[in-house]
Image 1 (cartoon, rainbow, N blue to C red):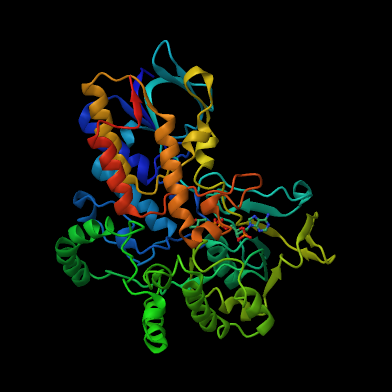
Image 2: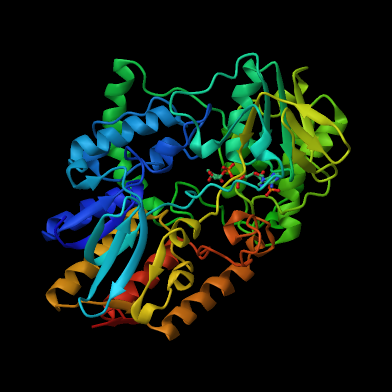
Amino acid sequence: MPNLYVLIIGAGFSGLYQLYTLRPLGLRVKIFEAAPDIGGVWYWNCYPGARVDTGSECYQFSLSSLWKDWNWTEMFPGQNEMQKYFHHVDEKLDLKKDICLNTRVRSAEWQECEKKWIITTEDGTIVRTRFFFICAGVNTEPLIPKFEGLDTFKGVWHHTARWPRNGLDLIGKRVAVIGTGASGVQVSQEAAACASKLTIFQRTANPCLPMRQRKIYTCTAELESNKKRKEDLYPAMFRRMLQTPGGLAYTSVPQTTFSVTPEERHLFYEQLYAQGGVGLWLCGYSDALTDRKANDEVYAFWRRKTLRRIKDPKVAEKLAPEHPENAFGVKRISLEQNFYEIFNQDNVELVDLSENPIERISEDGIITKDGTEHLIDVLVMATGFDSISGSITAIDIKGKNGVTIQEKWSQGTHTYLGEIHGEWLANLMKYAQTKHIERIETCPEAEEGWRQLVFGINAMTLFATGKSWYNGANIENKPFEPLSFVGGVPLYMQKCQEVAEHNYEGFVLS
Ligand code: NA7
């Protein structure tokens, strides 16, 4: 392959948008994508029940050329619909011709004499590029705990993000699910409906909110009215999203929790809960994620609602404990459809790993500390990912003078806001072209300043206390520190804009 100007790693939301923004500059740009198809996490996560848990209207590109001909069928689309969406994006923007699929990047080494990165892929192919952007995703590198005896297990086991493409029959099987994050919840709901026995191994209770899934725009009349509705509302909705903390259509109200009467508070929580989705987490009072007492109020409300859905009080207490390990929402809240009701079924059992941990895996199942052997046919590892920095550190990156720069990059690199980054980096590339810049580095002082800002804002919130992948807590020996910027999208955009306006202050351009 001839030399590139920019190599993008990853064909999920961020990578695709990056390609779209760089194309008009007439540069030689390619995407290398490890998977056989585009879509990023929406290619890999094909386990039963895999589903978006953000409302579909804000979980899409803001380009009118894409949304005007696209109609979601569900408020919370499944993996299948997400894959169709990505194919629609490709069809409209004609992206695939610049994407090399089945191409996993292994290493990137800066060659000072050539002023280029030497990129090596898994099959040994070498490509030279002036710049490379990692758009490899936030939850990409599966975390597979090293359970003793896993290699002796005679049944079938898979991580949720490496599920067999042709599916796996769970009907009548004895299924174990380890993990109760979003993936564990979703796969458990499906398995409970068809497995002869489902055993769910929970280490930490993780509150889930009702999804209240609904079909949307299915008949022609609805589609017609939706067309008009989208034209009227979408542009404002996408602009509004950039004014919210998370870049989604959710924001808290200005009041604080105890500035209103208990009755008013209760009514408000009821409304948020009834709407479904992440409202109770992200649209509540403004101090819910900064003040523990305020947070406890939300949790107490959620707990009351949840306890009454589970018949066995002992199981209910484990799923919605009086004294939770984490503040409400400092670990990502999952959405559920009937997760709490499945524990009322005879074929579903909960094992609390906090009091009875997994000792080892046997040929036939899982042995817990109390000596019980849980006999199973299928083991589902819904155990999460080396999140946020894992997809960067998976690449062996050697920067100038052979120094590994992975550590530096793991701070604040976040592909979630793909469009913002895409536009910003495209402008930087335009600048680099005009000024004949061959190398772009961050200067250590600017890097440290950014780190301090990320840490400082995080420390003002309850996120600093959460044992979550948000701060590396799920990976042994990973530093416990914020891996993303919780200061909100408006401040983040302002900072990015200031840097660009000051000729990329904080970067060394040469
Ligand atoms: P998550 O949210 O990281 O959940 C992983 C789950 O696996 C969580 O319940 C963990 O318990 C559990 N886990 C991890 N390691 C172990 C071991 N060794 N033993 C027992 N249990 C374990 O990953 P998901 O895939 O569900 O969701 C990731 C994101 O994708 C989600 O937030 C959405 O954004 C979409 P823990 O809570 O750490 O005690």
